[in-house]
Length: 423
Image (tube, rainbow, N blue to C red; front, side, top):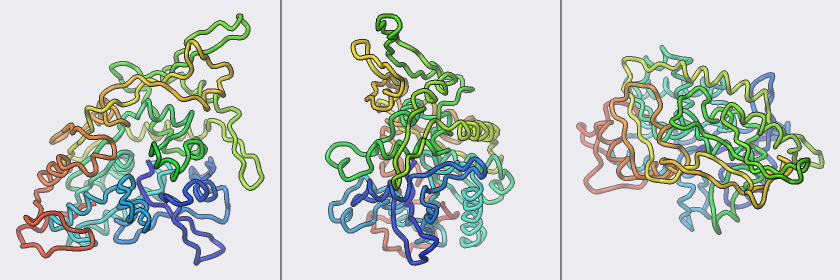
């Protein structure tokens, strides 16, 4: 979620091209202006509130630009703000192992607001696989996915099984919420999502602004905890509620995954935003929820082709939100709409701060290897232990002189040139 650069373009002005995600300077202003959206139940797509705006993923640098440094501005480079360094270190590592951009190394960014099974994303991934396959001389592709990217790959595999089998050699999946991310996603729909904390948060998109986007994002609904999965303990949302009809009696109300819809509907029934002087209602979207239910069916029907090797890496040893609680016995919630302005408390399980180990390892595939690494969700993308595993599984090694800049491509001896393309 949020792992691709997004640009806004105006249909009325072919020259207009503005990076709206990620950006540090004027982040909140540009985010509200261009990325706030509404879901179109007729098409399944999320569309910007400004009809003249189209959100696109830049395909520069063979797709790598969109997933490298998410804010490639001079400001970020000057201050070395690594919080927006996404696949950057991994790209550098792969280049130093002999991969070549546009020949054996490609990137695939996608509009993370949209569903993981939306037509454009599926068609784009197919085109990227075909490009990588042809550019490398007919070598099958090794896919490295992170987080929600794993759900997109799984949707593609489920819906395009033969194509996946034809083009893919190995799939290395990192920190994928196969069964959802209970604590983070339940709370995201109710109070929003905050990517950075502390002083840096003043330069970034506010939690409230992000919340107004997420309520209309199919991708978020698709990462709600899977109600059909046999959790060791079912994730719950708790609300300390005050009943004015019973002399203010306080009661702890529990909602399991299948019950949370009623909570979301009541808590978000008055949710709205103001855009260009117009008030727009943003309640819990049942049309998206129904779409996401079908996505879950597609995900559950995915089968790994016999010809594809699957590897999994998950983060461990970090407190990861699981159950969420709003209010307290001494400060209960009256109207459920108050939940959206409440700081939650969590119970935690083992994971990477975002995805529980239980969800990340519940892929249902016969993995060649499944390894836990002590790192948080984003940290897995630059962790040396992860890099060791990738090099082992890809059968490559780095130049003895150490890591080189992404702008340099080393001439490697023939035996070090990778046997497959990577995406």
